[in-house]
Structure formats: C-alpha cells, structure tokens
Length: 585
Image 1 (cartoon, one colour):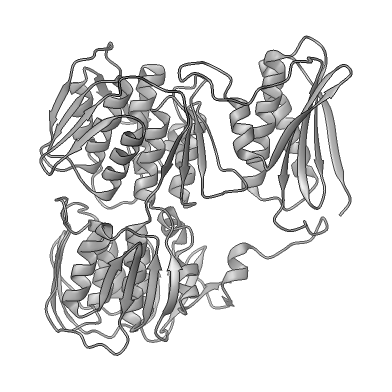
Image 2 (cartoon, rainbow, N blue to C red):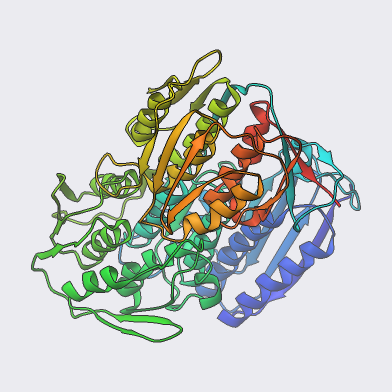
C-alpha cells in the first residue's frame, strides 16, 4: 500500500482546533483504509490534544496539521512557530489545563517533538499489529475469523446458532466485570487526578459510559498498546450535560451524578435505561443526595440534582435495604464533597468492595463491616496518577461454569476471585457438580459425575454472601437438565422472569410460574431447538447454555443485548468446544 498524506493549516482559535480535528478525521476516512473506529477515534483525540496545545501556547504564527498513513503506522503531526518544548507531566489535581499531553503519552505508541528553525513539530504514532492490506481489500471481521458461519434463516438482525455439544474442555479467561467497571469509571471522574484503570471490558455498556465521560468533559481513552486499560484525566472542558439519548442507554449513567456535582454543581440526566428487568427506582439515590444537602427535581424526562454549598461535617445514612446503586452513590458523593461518611446497611457485593478498595488506594480510610461502612477523607490530596484494576467478571465466570457443567465437561475459568463466586460454587456442589475456586481460577470437573438429585432452592439476595441475582439465569438453564424439583426467586429484578421464562418455554421447558418473581420446575427436561431472543443480557447468556443441550439447532437473536454485558461470550464458549456459529442470511 502506498503512503497517504493530508496537510492543512489550522486557525489559532478554539473553533479552529475543533474544525481541524474534523478535517483530519474526514481526510483519514477518505483514504478508505480499514483502521477500525477505535483507532480512528483515538488518533482523532490525540490530534485534537496536539492541535489544542498549539493553539493555546504557540504564538500567533501559522499552525499546520498533518496525517500520514503507511502500511505499518498512522502518524499525526502538528507544527507551530513557538520554540517552547511541551512538557509531559502530571499537573496539580485542581489545575485547569496541562493534561492533554498526559493523554497523548498514554494513548500513542510513540510520541515526541522535533525542533525546527522556526518553531517545533509535535507528533504521535500509532503502530498496527500487522501491516494494512492494500486499500480496497475487505478483510473478514474479527468475529467471522473466530466463529464459523452457517446459512440458515435468521430470527433477528444478528444471530448465532447453537447445537448440542461434546463436553466442553480447556481453559478460558473472563473479561473484567462490567458491573464493577462502570462504578469504577465513575469513581475515577470524581478523583480530580489521573486514573489508569486496567482490565476494563469492551462490552457496549462500558463503551457507552466512556462516551458519556467524554461528553461531560473528561479525557478518557484506551492506549493502543494496552486496549484493556482506560486512562481517565480530570475535566477541563465545561460540558455539564451528557447527551440524554446516550445516557438513557445504560442504567449506570446515575453513577456520574457525584462527579458532575463536583465539576459543575449540577447533574441533569435521563431516567436509567439498560435491561428491561423491572422498575429502576432512584428514590434511595435521591435520599442519599438529600443527606448531603443537595436538591433534586424530577420530571418525565429525567432528574436534576443541584449541589449544596460545601461543608465538612460527617454524613450519616441508613439504607432501608442493601442497594448497590445507592451505596456507590453515597461513597462517591462523600469523595466529591471531601466529607466523612457513615453508611448503615451497605451493599457489600464485590462491585461495591472494588470501589472501596480503589478509595483506599487513593488515600481514603475505609472501615467495613456487615452493618456499617465508614469513610474518612485523606489528610492531603495528591495529584499523582492512580492505578486501579477491575475485578474479573464473576457472572461471566458463572455462565461459563454452568455451560461446562451442562455439557459434562472439565474446564478452568481464569481471572475470577474465589469469594466472588463462592455462592455459585455452593449451588453447583449442591447439585452434584464438582466445583472449586482457588487462586483466581474456577475449576469445573463435571465429566463422569452423577447429579445428587437434590432440589435447588436459589433465592437472589443482596445480603453479604448471598446469591447474586445475575447467577440465577444460568443456574435455571443448568437445573433444567438435572433431577429434582427446583425453586428460583428474584425479587430484586422483578421483570427478569418475564423475559427469560417465555424464551425457555419456546424451547419446550415446562415451568410453573408461582408469581412474577418466583418459578418452580422439575428436571431433567429435554429441550428442542428453535428461534429464541436475548431480551436482556442474562436471558441471552442463559439461552446459550440451554442451546447446548436442546435437540437440533437453537438460534439466538438479539445479540446486541448480550454484547451489552459480554464482549465475546459466544467466542469463549466456542474456544471451549461449543458447537456455536454465526448465522448469515
């Protein structure tokens, strides 16, 4: 492939910087190279920072932007007439600028500057993992390289087909937890200092959260050298309201309220979106903010929270139930306000504990018991960068474990904490599935084992050590294949059974719905493949498990729902030996 280049002048104004970024992006797209949206967005963000730096600090002389594409790399250059050399360093936590070059250093594979007789040239390079094909070539997508294709009539726009499998064997590593990554990203925005967050999954809910951070003025991006890490830099671009249509896509948009209050004094957001599994109440969140003196107003479109005047006295809150969302809201509001917190009846799920661990790394004193969670602010605030890590996805691990068990296989599922999956391990052992979790590995040894025939009573719980509600769907799919009369209840997500059970019944499952949140059935049952739909994340993952035992072919549509929580769950199952493939019309 021949080298391509675009060069153009930049107006020395903020509007000129924005126009130059668009012009550069459009020019790269016009070459028709298969760079992918992530690389293009990252290059545009880095170019914007280089251009903005030149506009802010260079003299009134000309500024020129350039992009050059070869088969090995994409290079961005900005030339100006100032001889001053840019310094890459971490500014004070409350400084309004100076963070752009930190982002350049984090996102580019190589970057630097070249002194010129009449100024300097700042540049950044993005290397490709493999040389680009000639322009016009159409390489297969990543998923089509990993999964075979089967041509049968689809039931939705995107579909996979699942057939009964041989026992699943091998090992696979889970992604970072979506349910932990989302509040940790929100916590990073509340820090007013750079945060490097590793093991961040690439599912669509997380990508939506990153878009919201950028819309609200924070710098956020994934370094090309480490796509599982996200770098978040404090806001220096006042943009208090993320786009409502984007915020409404996910439930976790409400985690941004404390950071928005700290940065702008107000937070205007739509009602939470996400999976349609029941009412997404915000009452406990609003009561948390009221305890800090904030004022809340609501309407049909969403809610507006206005920050109270600052104070330093301790805040005490008693939650009526162990709400994960309200617990995280209280923690982050205390961080933004810099005030001590005493939270009674906290949620102590791994997702909340991961935020507490991150706060301890940041200098906060945290004391945790089953009844009270107490925070004490640090004595001094540093501007140094923080390094946090997202824990492994316990729900993805549980889903894979149930898939291995239902196939009668042996496999190791890597990257998940022992305590995080302890309730699931207890349920599997009760059913007769040998399971153990040690040293970050969940091991399933289901080959040549006999079920106990004992009835499983799986009640979703918010209590410490209780069964997470998201474990229930894969356990239902597994229990359908095992002897016993099993009872399942999920009062936490009252709409979930209404999504999952009708789809299982399409496969032939006989399930007695005792109430909208409770069901009972007797196994084992033989299911028959047909077309089903992933109406929410956990329904989709449970239906993949059911398809592994159903006669014939099960086609699963609605993969956009599944990808909200799992970047590549079908690929992980295929890696273990599942007979699963893409469906193309």
